[in-house]
Length: 202
Image 1 (cartoon, one colour):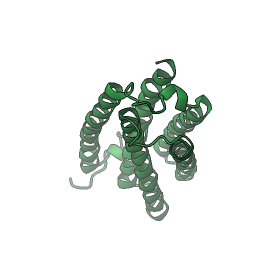
Image 2 (tube, helix red, strand yellow):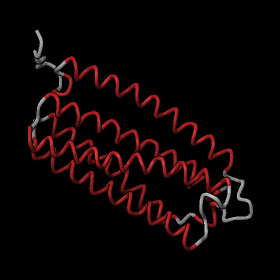
Image 3 (tube, one colour):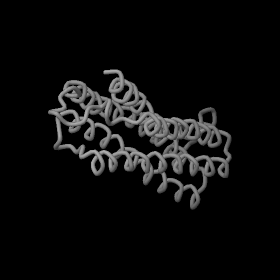
Image 4 (cartoon, helix red, strand yellow):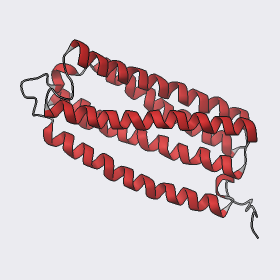
């Protein structure tokens, strides 16, 4: 029967359309994996080609990228709590942890933009400086753009939650952006390891 809810499933899976949408988003994430894999391969190919410009070891500041890492990884934790609150039909708790996640995501973007500004203005390190920096800014800029999209996307979902409450549709939207957010955190772990840590020891 159309519109029938299967109460044995979590709210976001109770409608067939929601299940199809979630499956479609998993497929979309597969395409995103291919995109970031290409960017990582490109960066790792060119990361030693500095053309006489600043090297990773000269540019990277441990404190700065550690703050970015802690902000983003903790936002993944708070997103998990938000999903937990949703599963327990706690709209207020969901909204609180959702907003905390966005504040952490906004903090991450602030520090990343600050990092780019410091490199460009104080170190003269731009995309045009070397193949290394071109690959670096493209990879991290693409990730940062994804986080920015996620922040605005989440704000729109919060507005829908306030207006409509928890329904199978709004729950599905929360769950999907939760998948998206965790995916970006996984990508950042690779950035932290292959870009920053590798840059400091390479």
